[in-house]
Image (cartoon, rainbow, N blue to C red; front, side):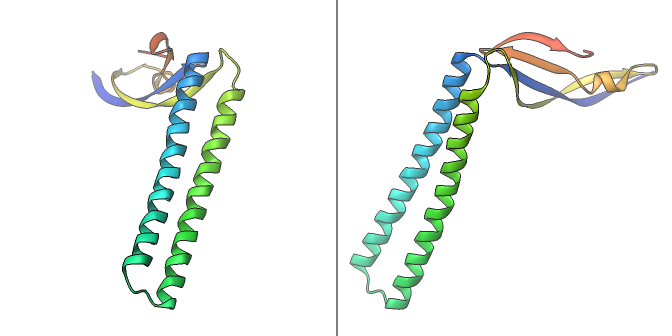
Amino acid sequence: MSLQILRPVTIKARVTESLKARLTAELNAAIKQLDDEMAELESQVKRAQLTATISPQQQLQLHQLVEQERAVRAEKKAQLQEEISRIQALPLGAEVVQGTIQAMATVKVGDNLDALMTTEIVVEDGKVIAIRGEV
């Protein structure tokens, strides 16, 4: 007797210069988006201050809200920049986890479940170079 199950499969990428460049570009794009969002927010606040009559209390609340948003975005930006530094420090040839997918597997009496549940796919520049564990 056998049973079909879903099992996790870890996707790992071998570090190459092109992987570093791609990940860095993605993070730089995220940083630019944060900067653009902040610029848009500040622009909206200035328009609101010019076009509407806002009480001093509302101006203070608006200022506090903008400062909170600026702080949140600054923290996210710092985290992204730290991630860029970590990526640049990765040694070529190292393997990094990119994510996990689900795959079907057939399990039968006597199978090694631990080995079945630790299957990995290793990719290098988008190409599968190894499948580890029981298939």
